[in-house]
Image 1 (spheres, rainbow, N blue to C red):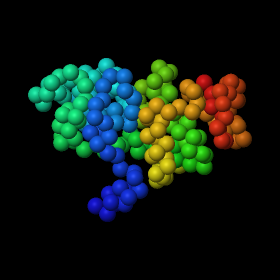
Image 2 (image 1 turned 30 degrees about the vertical axis):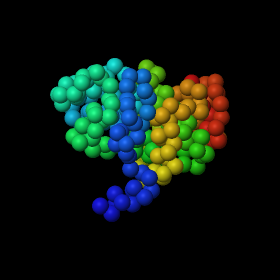
Image 3 (image 1 turned 120 degrees about the horizontal axis):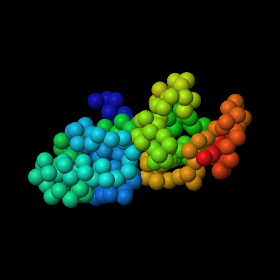
Image 4 (image 1 turned 90 degrees about the horizontal axis):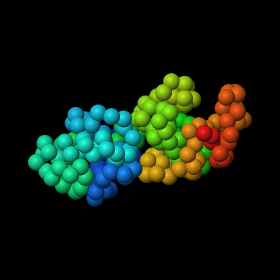
Amino acid sequence: MLLGTCAMALGLTVAAPSAGAQKLEQGVRSEHVLQLQEQLSSLGYFDAGMTGYYGSITKSAVREFQQAQGLSADGVAGPKTLNRLNHKVKAEGNTLRQLAKLIHGEARGESFEGQVAVGAVVLNRVHSGEFPSSIPKVIFQKGQFTAVDDGQFNQKPTATSYKAARKALNGADPTHGALYYYNPKIATSLWSKSRPTLLTIGQHDFTR
């Protein structure tokens, strides 16, 4: 209980979707959609990658949940659906936490924009078709992120890391579609250095 209280004081807990969104529907991309997907998954309705994007698979899962609960099965997560869902299962925010941990491990010394940029790269990969279509799978794809390989991922993320993760999940992308980034001062990969640089934010060059 004490740990939960401390987390709330630091702003690290995740509000249930109904607390921050009155309606979620197809085409929306946000942290609240990510929470919705996690809740539906834990109840057995959603069997796909955690993306934070409300696509056709999420809509179908919502419709199935609504049918099982005797609600209007329109595939739109409005107040009644979200409230019923929140009574069924708690929004844990595990995927948001993983994204915040990656941002902290990879970019804790960068500006806020630089931290959002790292989160945006993860989201860009999820939606690119060239990488796994799931935030956790992108994060843990072998050999992709130094912080995961060297254990920095396991450090406790800060409130700023969570804020950057939420901003990226809600669609912010300072990189304009980058799929990769590296620090040119310490990078040894010739492949990374050979790719055209889209822009530089802090210590990182962002590329496609």
